[in-house]
Length: 615
Image (cartoon, rainbow, N blue to C red):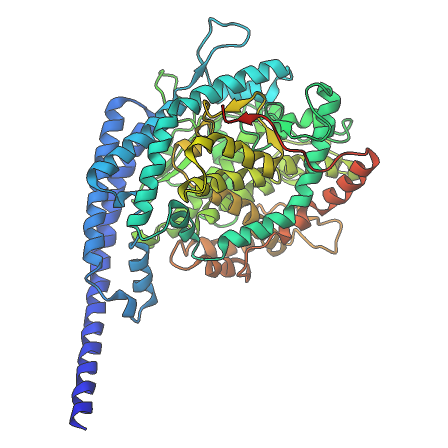
C-alpha cells in the first residue's frame, strides 16, 4: 500500500510540475512571438530591398540578415526541446510548439545555409536579368520577360518568331543555372533530413497536415483529367487548322510555344484563334480600361473597394505609401513577378507588381490584394499563426474575387462592359476562356512539384533531370518544347518559382478550393441557385455581399491557428477538399466539348513526345 501511495504522490508531483511548466511555456511564447515578429520584419525588409532593387550590396545584406535569423531560430529550436510540450493540456500551446519544430532550410549549418542563400539568389538574379535580342532587330538586345517577351509570346502568330523567343529565354533563364540548381537540390535534401523528414518533398507536404494529401490530389486530378483532355483535343484541332499539319500534329502533344504563354500554364493568350463561336464577342475590357483612363492606382483602389463592399478590412495607409505598383523607370533591376508581402508589424503590408492596364492584370491585382486581405484578417494572432490555413488557402482567396470580377455581371456593374448579350453560345465561349486559364493550369501546377518531389526523393538520375521534366509535362499536359532539348540544356529554372525555391502545390490546391469557396460564397450572397437558370454559378458576382464577407472573415481570421479542415468548415461547413464545385462550374462546357469533338472527329489524348533526348 505504501508503495502505491508513494507512486501516486510522485505522479501527482509530476502532473503539478507539468502544469507549472505549461504556464511557463505560455509566457515563453508571448515573448518569443514578439521577438520572432521583430526579427522577421527586419529580414523581410532586407528581402524587399533586394527584390525591388537587385544589386550585390542588397543581396549581401539580405543573405547576412537571413543567416542571423536562421541562427536565432536554431537557438529557439534548442530551447523548445527543454519543454515536454507533447504532454500539455492546451492544444493551442502544443500547436505553437509544433509549428516551430521545423526550421526548413535554416536547419543547415551556418556555412551551408549561407551557401543555400547564395545559390538561391544566384538563380533568382539570373532569372530577373534575362535579356533577349529582338527577332527582327538583332542589334536590339534589351528585351525583358516583362513586359516585352510575354507580350510577344501572347500576341505573335508567327510560329518561327515564337520558337526563337522560347529558345532564347529557356537557354538563358534555365540552362545557365544548372550547376546552381544541382547544389540547391543537395542542400534541400540535407535540410529536410535535419528536420527529420526523408526528403524535401515530405517537408513541403507536411504544411498540409495530412498524410493522404498527395493521394487526394491524384484522385481529384484524375476526376478532372477527362475535361482537360477534351479541351486539349479541341485546342490542338483549332491550332492545326490555323498553323497547318506541318506545325501541329493530329494526335501528338501540342508545341508549347503556340499556346500564348512562355510556360503553357494557361492558354487564354490564344483565345482569339481557338475559341468557339468566333462571331460571338469574347469579354476583354482592356480597350475600355484604356479608353476610360485606368491606371494601376485605380485598379488597386477597385480591388480595395471590392473587399470593403463585403464589410472586410480597408487597405491601410502603409500599403499605399510603401507598395510598388508600377515598374520603376530609373533603370534598376527588380523582380517584376507580382507578389504580396507581410512585414509582421500591424498594417505594414505591401504589393510589388509591374502593373499594366489590361483585363488580365485587373484580375491579378484582385488576386494579390486577396493575399493582403488575408494578412490583415489574421494580424491579431501570435506570430507563429501569421499564415494561411495551408499555402493553397492564401492563393485561393484573391482568386475567388477574380472569378467574380471576371463575370459579365460585375464588369457591367463597374461600367467596363456594355451591350453584352449572354446567350448560350456566348456563355460557352466565356466558359471556354475561363477553362483556358483554370483547367489548363491544373496539370501544369501538378508537374511543377511532382518534378521537384522526384528529384528531392532521389527518384531520377541526375543525367536525366531535364528529360524527366519534359516527360512529366507531356504526360500530364500533353505539350512539348518547340525544339529538341537534351541534357545539355536545363529548362526547369526558366519558371520563376523553381528558381526562387517556391513550393507550387499551393497554386494547384488554390484552383481546387477557390471553386469550393466561390460556390459557397455565391449561395450565401443569393447569387447562385442550381435550380434557377437566371442565377448560374458562372455569372455570380459576390460584390457587396456582407454574408459572404462574414464567411470569409470567419475563415481568414483563423490564420494558421487551426488545421485547414477547421478553417474550411468555418467558411462553409465542409471539411474535405473536393473537385465537385469545379465540375459543376464547367459542366455546360464539358457537355458542349464532348459533342463538338465527336462531330469533328477530334482525337482525344496524345502520343509520346520525342522532343527531349539524353544527348
